[in-house]
Image 1: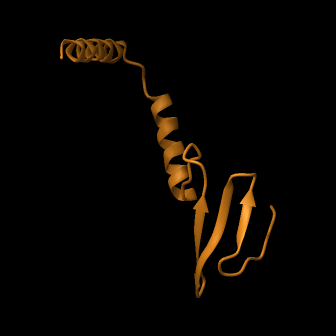
Image 2: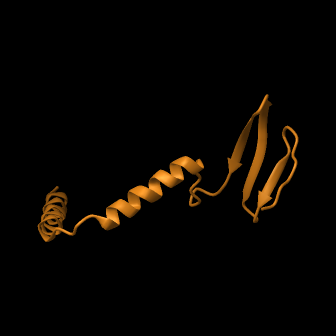
Image 3: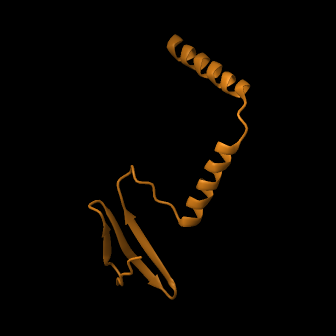
Length: 85
């Protein structure tokens, strides 16, 4: 792990297009600003872990062929409805 010290309004660059800026410091809390391309997702770690667990649960869910068939028919109907407009 790289450990860096930064002061208010100072920043850290990650690669060429991600910048972490120290926005505010109050007591033991630091506010950071993150400038990154829109294609880069940025989450607090606890939210990232929840997303990861939800994805694992979705993959582990039993496969139901009827559900897949129902979804396929739904999208066909939706596509046909859009073409009629």
